[in-house]
Length: 378
Image 1 (cartoon, one colour):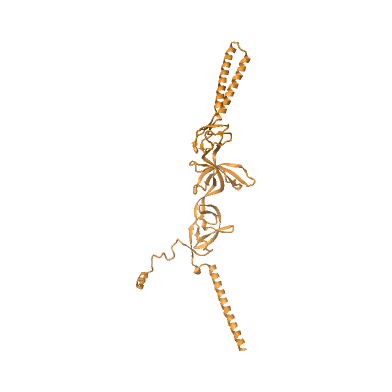
Image 2 (image 1 turned 135 degrees about the vertical axis):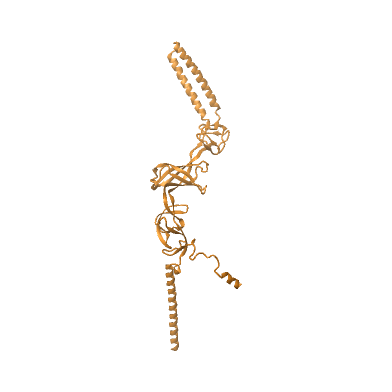
């Protein structure tokens, strides 16, 4: 009986000790949670980086992608079948309009042209003689009309042969730069055979598409800034030349064409370009660094610093460029925001600028007497 009583007493003591331990742990956890909610112990300010918002002009833009094309481009091919007699150009050469490029062998046509010219000359003499005889009534009017018809036919045959002879000579239709040569001297070429290409790349055309919602914002003459992966950091500037007359019913996009000067021939036809159209400029826009923006679902906010405390402020974002974000609403031109350390900031919690001097001023060396005590210890 005594043993049973002792066992009961031990069990009660163990249960009491366990309950006391659990209560202590619960109280500690509640205290930690309360401290976390209140912020840093003792109300100490969180060290962050802060800066005043920037007020500067910002461009309102429309983004698009497009493909570069030469302002004029053609594949040079012969109009007739013949053997190449002369090649008068070099690959990659810059040529002028009308410059001779290729000449085909036209010996047979030249001989026939000379024959037709001789016939024309003989017919002209017969016609002149008939006119003189007609004045003296020695030839009939019908004969004069017949010879005049023969003269006109002879002139037409000469002009036809001269036109055919010009087809045996290939000239540059406009000024530009030639591409690779695809034929050799003495080669037999036919209509459609590619000889070379000619591109006028002094100005580049860029065709791109923008959503129909931008229709009211774009107009000819607007500035376009194009970028290419082949030239990182370089901006090619031009203007909108033409706006398409139709919206694609499938993609709901509108096609635009821009012209970009290309004096150094950096851009090549066929290159992929990203284009930015500047549709408007807001002069006094409020800008903050990208890292100061915190997103929560579809909402965005920043921590504005008011009287030494971080205030969670909902903002509306605008344009974004060069690491800066435009704030359309929520901040004033003289606002100060947290730019680094936003993950440590809490709403209404005190904050201190990491770049500012700590309270009491900077420490300029060891405390008074510190050097003397160190030497005595040595």
